[in-house]
Image 1 (cartoon, rainbow, N blue to C red):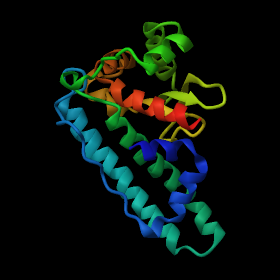
Image 2: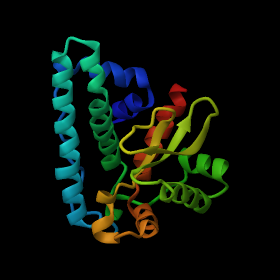
Image 3: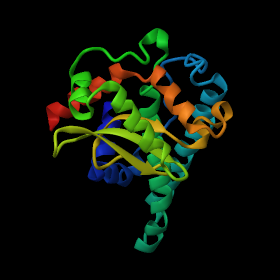
Image 4: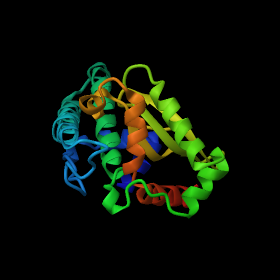
Length: 221
């Protein structure tokens, strides 16, 4: 998983992974918890559809696009495939990170322990509550579909809130926490009320995983 995070943060690595398309086949990652383990905050029905249908569709689309790319011989035909590679590749990267980004409350979901990540959040945002408010405000403001991110900026050495459209992966920062704001991630349960979904998801954010990403990012910066 941390390899996916690093790949998402470095455009050249993402591009090179596509170039090696003929040598690899992407698969749907298994979850570390049951589909209903995040209830009541994220329903089992949403998790089932989100993982087994939506993420699987990105995996299938990426494998198909990479297979076609490997067979093409002209720059024009390869350029035509860039949109499919970006959309499905980003969807696979983002969702693979997202599942690790979540944990049931019984497994520590929602609990931010004292440590490097909490200290950085308080330093860069003033408090944990202000941090959550800023993330939620930016994510809710996304027009259409996309992702809200907490990313580590190696240039500034700070945590920053960033958004990406559609399934674009976060390339400008190292992803620490990502929140899916596509309707398939919340609509069945929260209808059109994004704010309720964004408030609830913090109860199942895997801060332990986020801290591991943060620590690794700061070591390699």
